[in-house]
Length: 132
Image (tube, rainbow, N blue to C red; front, side, top):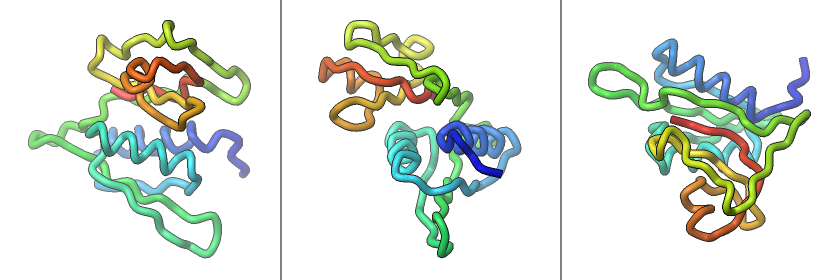
């Protein structure tokens, strides 16, 4: 079965893995997914990620992060802009996710960044997903 939206597929795998209490999950490798995982790691939602060569497309192994009481650091993950309906925001229209607790990952002309970074640099773009 072909996947038309690799980002949504990756987010669903991570969300389900966190709900099931898994230590790590594997998603299909793409440069965009790698950049998203880098932002999630930098913001403290996942523990780590590494690429695995499987002589095909490749995989990204994502190590999920949990608290001492086994609750996931990642409460929610939502795809915003989809292939059928792209969602763009201007620099003045970027809203906070859950009052600043969460982040929005935005694809801008200067690369992927969080909503906070986009507000600081005063640039808009396509909202890919939100994490809280």
